[in-house]
Image 1 (tube, rainbow over the protein chains, first blue to last red):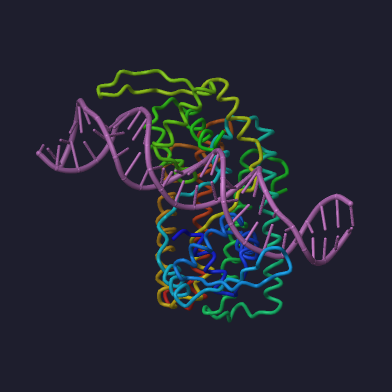
Image 2: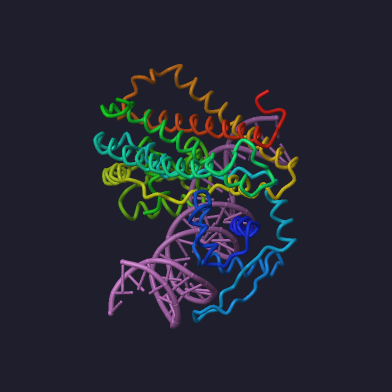
Length: 187
Length: 187
DNA sequence: TAGCACATGTAACTCGTTACATGATTTG
DNA sequence: CAAATCATGTAACGAGTTACATGTGCTA
């Protein structure tokens, strides 16, 4: 079973959905840590159904195609829970940005500065977005008392990861800019 | 040109190497942010040579096979420098661990704790390794005065990224353990 | 003498992306 | 009336992994 299979099960464990909706959610919210295009989703759903982990119900929609509403089965739910606690085998990190920094000494310093600054901006934007989401969650939830058996726990925990990650990335960009001798970094 | 191509150019810009040595360096040191197996390296080197970005010299080694020493060309060096300052298009993040956390609410709480603790241990080990490397660098280099045009700058900057990343990951694991109600987390 | 390091390559397979293909309904 | 959204699928391609293939020299 591919990781995508578990991404889909994880979404369907929350609520039934169509392949189209699942593909959307693989852009956001869980697109922040797992993505897939619809061309991957539809065949994967068929495979999961063959294994008895999901089932679908056809809804004759207004369009030319039937809408298929998928839901997770009890077996699928057990499979998901078992996978979730199986330790991840360390996967190789792949970060093109770090690879560029590794070779940045070969480039012209002005271009290097611009490159890092643009990256810093990306992280700043991502952090702002996550902070907005956090505020909206805090507005209607007591996050200090979140039940670990509530799906909202998964949402909040991964959001915290995103917040922490962006802050780390921003801090490192700031350090880099300073090291490169940028006059704009940290005043 | 694939990203692997630039990983190889980035290594060859520092010093000439054989395919075998490049494959090794793609496990460490740059394996921390880009990896490849030898089966990928050899064909990629041939492609780079066809483009005139690297050249090789055959050394009749003691073994049954010739040893090919590759070095970067002036064109290759220019290509690398141009790539290094080109802003990265935002690549989709893929983090299987976060995906598990997203579905952790479906699992049994004891198993969840063990899973996170094992992950925390992985980050602790990685951080310790990076800290050792940092110490060994500090022992013979004044890192505050590193020249951005020195290859050592790339080494140190990426190491700093690793240190910062592992600290972020550790901190988040600690928060998660606390949120899951672990008695061992933070005293 | 068994296993590892050195050293280079090919083949089969999986995972993921982009493009191809279709077509109704809603919104600007 | 043009474009986006909803909705489902297939095909071609690229990137990466694992296994296959070969063979020497050194070390435990």
